[in-house]
Length: 122
Image (cartoon, rainbow, N blue to C red; front, side, top):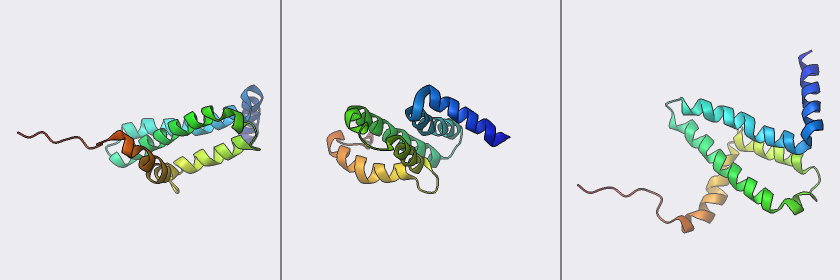
């Protein structure tokens, strides 16, 4: 019965917004929920994980919007997008950290200058 309800709900969402809406929901709803939970914990590890995810999410959203003409030509793009974003936030893979440390940070750090705050001398 539960699977039937899930199937009807997913079909309804697909009819309303298509694969783009489903991929956007997958890439936003669970990470947003986990980010709200992370705010209330004392551990800085989950805060860093979700902040890193949102940085990568923002970057990929900008790239996707700029390359929207090309995105239309990629077969099964939105299914690939669902897999990519699931990889980014899945606790087993932590793909957002990989993308940030190996791609974004080396590419952007030279343009950001010093990132560590300077110590005040007393």
